[in-house]
Length: 244
Image (cartoon, rainbow, N blue to C red; front, top):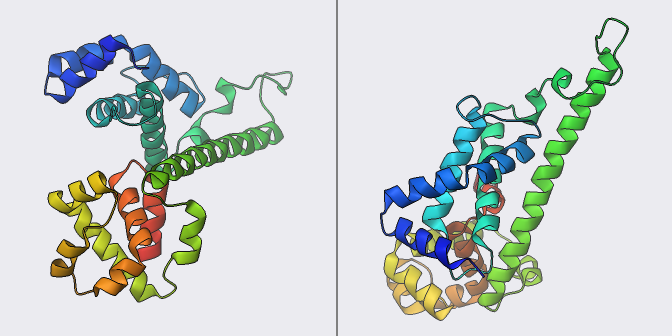
């Protein structure tokens, strides 16, 4: 269970108490640096490394977005957000662990003059790339597990989605539009979260789709909406690739 003091602090942050937010960021800076260093697989310094700035913004985001109803602890949630944002930064800048100089971490294989052979450098580069992919794979796995838990709250099993997903591109595009409408409408969004069902009556008035089609695609539309509304970085990326 979340410690009562930090629970109260997070509630105050979400109510607009910026001074409390600053205190929490200062208090948990060692945690932020630890997660950042582990993700980058190198030592990082506050005020010197861009990744630390990204991590601080991510921790700030976690404080604002943490939902006390979720099963995940705040620190697990914050760690996931930090990792996702740093990996997103790596991808956008095409750097990350690949840019870590092997001389800063590898001391084996040096010649008599202290130089590292090109073979060792090649092995180190491959090792870094493998580590980065392992980190991404682990985050993907954790995200899918989290998605499965949320889907079950709506009475949906992940295995069902492969069977009920629309086969035609137009049908999938229509389902995406319906899900987006739900996400952007407070009333529809609240109805879905409260009842765990689609607001069919309201949707009929807003989309050029028959009720029969909405009912047939119900679980698929709900799954899309869950992804769009949640902190599902990789699944959201997958949806963008499907659309584009």
